[in-house]
Amino acid sequence: MPELRIPAEKRSEFGKGAARRIRRANLVPAVLYGHGEPPVHLSMPGHDLMLALKNPNALLTIVTDDGDHLAIPKAVQRDPIKGFLEHIDLLTVRRGEKVTVEIGVAVHGEAAPDTMVNHELTTLTVEAEATHIPTGLEINIDGLDVGDHISAGDVPLPSGSTLVTDAEHVVVSILAQPTAEALEAELTEAEAEAGVEREQATEEEPAEAAEAGADEAAGGDAASDES
Image: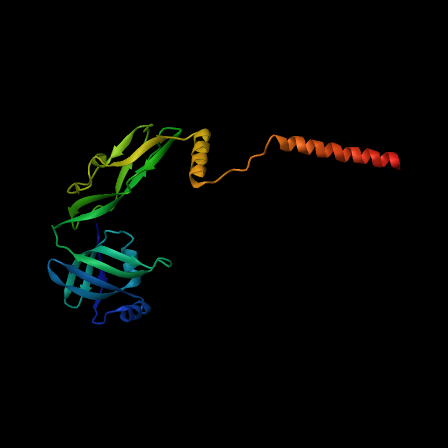
């Protein structure tokens, strides 16, 4: 994984008001901590940080006046509506040090026809060297059929990485594609549990409609005779 260099300035103002002023300047409040050292409060350029965090486990070189600090993102806060960065916690790491991180799992390939892919686990917890954190993990489901599955222990890991997630945990399972009848039964059951009743036409309705039509026709014939 390439190291990304991002400049940062130490800050001495804290609190919501200070954080708002920092964000108005297109900066992001950050805290760098780890290895028993006192936390360092920083302001970092929002655009550069946003680009770097496209990889959630990016290895960052934080450039400050007192030197460079190697770190990885630990906790990222984003605006729930606009998505911009509000705050970030950074964990200091050293070369050769092992860290525990969450790695995304991507699924490739096509399972057998008339099946459904149930992606039960989208990330795996692994331990890796801080400067060699995997960017992602991949599994191939080509040809898998109903009842087949891939467990965490079956997912190939890069050299130097160790699985932390339970190896028996199912990541992907292959299910039979439900029939229309099965879907209808599930819907009916869900509606019954929710107390929803469907409106159904009764057998009397067509008969009533026919009688009404006959009465109208009879009325029309009578009017013709009178004229």
